[in-house]
Image (cartoon, helix red, strand yellow):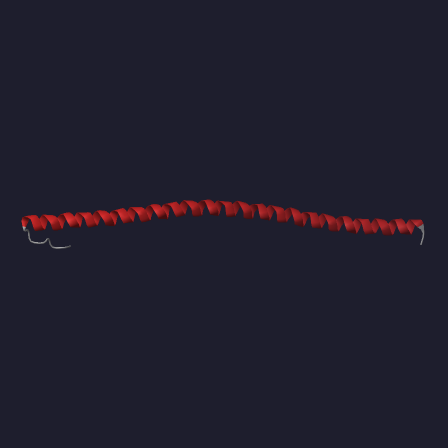
Length: 92
């Protein structure tokens, strides 16, 4: 093999190696972009879950307060009926 043939073989090898390294670098860049998107999406979902959790907690508190008030109103109704010997009101 001559020096020229060796140089051509080495050049061909380097060309293939450079192409493969470029492909590998592109895959890594795409992977990095994809992982950044996944991170952003998960972060947004975590914020959404936190907000939804607060809303559900508030809804539960409001429902509890509503039921408590209804029970207190019923207690007042019963006390009035007993005090004035009023016939029980018909329930709707």
